[in-house]
Length: 321
Image (cartoon, rainbow, N blue to C red):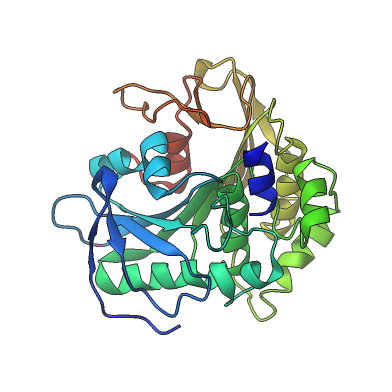
């Protein structure tokens, strides 16, 4: 119940260094800009000489923090193996008692404002300090972090080259507490055009492409109903101009009877991939182990279904071999 209500109640660049060590091999970035959303920032830098590497922004869920998100998802292990940088924004209890990103607050999800701008400043700071490939910047997150992932991809399409939403909702599915309840319950529905217009209002002068999106959702999620996956598809099918594309559905994906993958392609490449995961509630799907497509750890909000969603998100981004 605490998690449920937590999910609802959820610049000028600095030249300072990242100098505060944290668990899981990460470092805290103490200053990264004006930080209007009052967030914290952690980053994981793999060993070795890095040149023009991808950057992945990972957003935790409610009652979690950056360290737990890194441990459960296995993003840092994958980053060490494939050599890319991982950036972890972290919510503070002063902003939200249950450390949820405020995905439904208008002041935090508008372009160049609040928490969204703080995350943008973290990215700009990382780009200034490290050799980041600007053509390979991605964002992903779980639950409230998944909803915030949709926010970042929607309002900063000029930055991101792909996104992956786990148990999230469409951009601007809610603008207050009442509509947040409705959205989580899968009761906020719009046409693809109406959903897309919410995004385009944030980018009135933008004429470029929107980032492709991967959507992971448990069929048994009791907190953020799977109907939201369908609404996300509607929003992004319009933005990515694949509304008239016939989707390709693959049950028993890669031999896994728990996973059905549905793909909408554009110009021969996946624009939207939706993974429906049977037997999964409100949790991160993982595949604990040391195999080439395995990783992550089980916990209250992470379940082993022989499906490492982190690896498949990275595969969708094109950053794993």
